[in-house]
Length: 217
Image 1 (cartoon, one colour):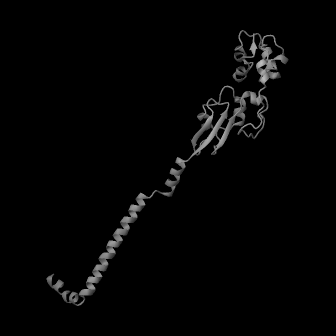
Image 2 (cartoon, one colour; image 1 turned 180 degrees about the horizontal axis):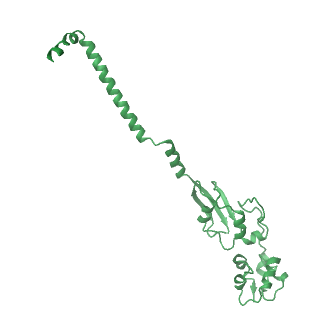
Image 3 (cartoon, one colour; image 1 turned 180 degrees about the vertical axis):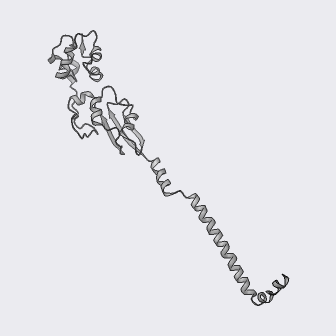
């Protein structure tokens, strides 16, 4: 073994400088490769993927919407991107008793996605009855009524109507009462209390709230 090593000594003495340079270059190359591989692995572990970055940005997105009209808690609410109409209605406390629920279920798509700065207006039964909103319109713009008729100031001076004896014409003078509802009121007589208008289903709660101070027995 010693003889084998000694046979290389003349070679190393002759090419001593070249051997040192070659060995140094090999060591530097090996060190550089090691450092490069280590840094590449470290950056790969620390950097989030593109999909994760997009997901985080989407989850943190928010927008503002306004809900008004016949809801329990109208206002401006912050919600997340991707929220639907049902979420905005829930933030506003839900549809109130004065809303025309049949109209609402026919024209409002609760599964629809919301957009930022959107305004949602839920009409009352009186507004639908007075044609502020078109109840049979297939595609409805319910952002807000443009021309809401002003309630007459003469309503405070209106005579109290006796629901047990009033004619259809007299009942028709009450807010929210038309020919059809007036006929229902007459057909459901007599009434022991004014609240029986609701229990006998002559009017809904929304209409009753509008007329309860204008009727008597």
